[in-house]
Image 1 (cartoon, one colour):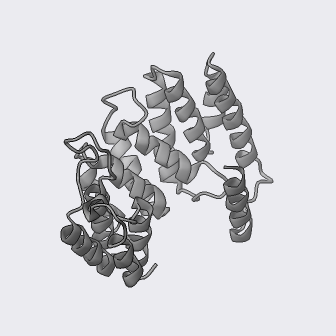
Image 2 (tube, rainbow, N blue to C red):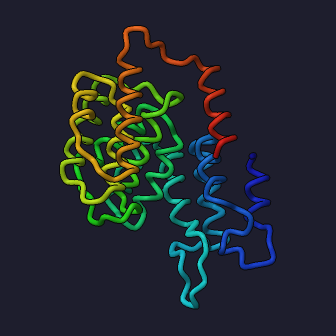
Amino acid sequence: MNFSDLARKAAKGSGPLSYGAAVHPEDLIRFSLAYGADGADEIERLCKQHGWHEDGLLADGTRVAPLARWAAACIAYGRGGAASLRHLLADRTIATFAIAVLSEVRTESSVTVLLDYCTSTTALSDEPDDPFWRALGALNGLMSFDDGLVPSQEQQKKLQYLVIRTFSNARTAYQQTLCLCALRGAPIEGSLEWAKAQAVTDPGAMRAKSAAIKSLRHRLSEAYMPPSAEEKRQIRRQRALNA
């Protein structure tokens, strides 16, 4: 998507352009990733021109995409990279938008920001949309799959610490499941033994435990070879087909 394409989508539609017209959050994320600071300037211009909403719930009860908040996260990333999203994570009204952008960046820097956030804060709610759980879910998506990033040893140790700490305080089956899934991204000493030792009774958590043990055992094997770039593309393609 080029600059003209985004501007055209922002001006398209029969409804109020402040609702975003034909622009979707994914468009803004891809645009900021592709065009950096110039893309951020264009997103900011369109946001101001069309008066995109910050609150997704209008006074009359209508729900719209809070594109102004998506724009703020994408603008920050475009101008300063993953590190520039740190300050947005401190604001719960926009933290989940920053996390969504970081989950699409798929770099070591985005993993670092998410890990630092999770290890320096705690969840304020058991709801899955709490920023903490969203951030841990993003780490799971970035680090735990065969086609994901290959994190540094330091990042794997931080993830292992985070998972063990979080699991010990988990109050729902969802939280236990997410922790066990995320642990797959830390195939280091102690992870496999810890996963085996956890007693879970929820069917979903039990499946997550089995999957974690299988993945960790596979990755810790001396014969393990990380998939090539082409193999990663094939894995992503198959996942998309199964989605």
